[in-house]
Image (tube, rainbow, N blue to C red):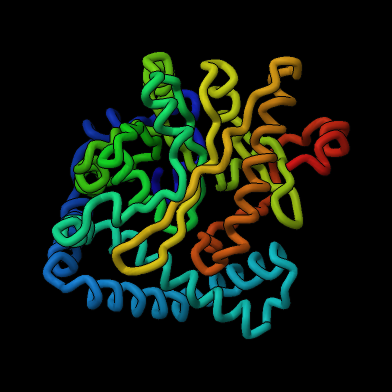
Length: 333
């Protein structure tokens, strides 16, 4: 359960985290790291409410600086939800989106302070986790599919504290000093991070051992993805998570969160999306991915200001699915 660039587990790329670790550390890298450490130290000293207020203020400032991106947020939100981009409702949700985007990492950073007063179960509150608990007890592999909605960082970070050890996938940042800092924060409560480049083998090992992996699959997949209906239009999407679920007989479980307060995130597991062994693998992976996105649409509609609209989701690209699939699954939910 990662941050925005974690859309897919790919085949090994030319540059991996190991390559980055051996790359020379430049003066720019050291300056960036010092700035990050200074910011983290500053936020750690602030009371929670002040830290979140600071993040909200930075989000408002960012919206004013990135005028073109703010327009994109309004346009994408309006098109997806069937609203007017210049309506007061959309403008309010767009403002909330920028504030929320910066509050997510700050709320995650302040977890040690939050956990001094609350238990992990009080911070990350799941409505019903029987399916997950039964799978953990039976050592049934699970693939959690989620999106940049609510606070995905807290969900991934606290999952091991709630009895669900997970491995999450993400692309490391170029600056190895920053990557070490980010990884330390994400792994401090037991979450295992797997680098996106060459992640296939580590993921296979986790699933073969009956473990759980978490993937954010709501970002544009470019030419390597398949076009899947998402709200008002098709979007290039990776289907690898569904392919892995079929291959390893893993539960394919959509999971989402919503921030309901400074110290509380509510989460819920949707019923697992079952593979259909009678279907060809490519059709079934597309079907499962489509069903996930329909669940995601419902979750976004309930809290549009907490979705990551800053990402350009509906870009051109991606392979066209078999036209028969669209008609076949047009009403499937």
